[in-house]
Amino acid sequence: MNFTEDLFYTYLPLNQQRVTENIHQDHLFFRLPNTWSILLVTITKDDEGENGLSHRNLLETDFIVCVLNVFYETAIKIPYFFTDFGACFLMPNEYIDECCAALSSFEKMTYDNFKLVLFTNKVSLRKIYEQGHELRIAKMVASEGMVIPVVRGDGLDFAYRIAGNDKW
Image 1 (cartoon, one colour):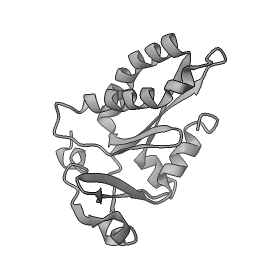
Image 2 (cartoon, one colour):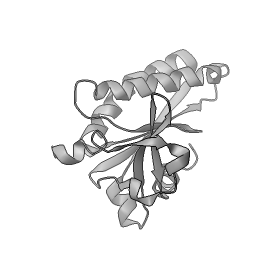
Image 3 (cartoon, helix red, strand yellow):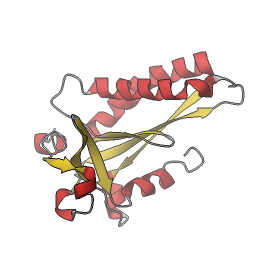
Image 4 (cartoon, helix red, strand yellow):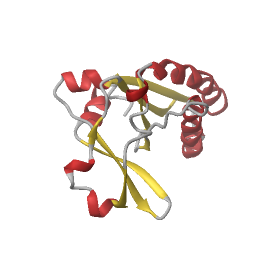
């Protein structure tokens, strides 16, 4: 374990000014370590699933909690985002398999109860950088008491493209 890189986001400086005031300031954004990966998670409809999509937001919230529980007893904080397609997590490589394992039981419950398929894929930041793409992140204040990760670069778009374009 590389504690410095694992704690990258945990110790990323928080910019106290609002996002709208700082979104274009390059010096506030830091390149994520190449020892991190992107975990993409979405829910797709099975041919038999009819009403399950109405539960999609609840299920997406549940799988976010499922992944965050992996980090609960650690000092590691990870950034994550709701997306149009599900959720995106950025994390140290060594936690990817544990998160996927945690999601596997959730995947079975999602299908058994809602006939929805949980689709996950991972893309290493090393691969993204080696392909000439970039991903930089900042912690910013969105509103009083609300801190959010903000990313810049085309790295997430590239990750979605190579992760299984038909799912996203």
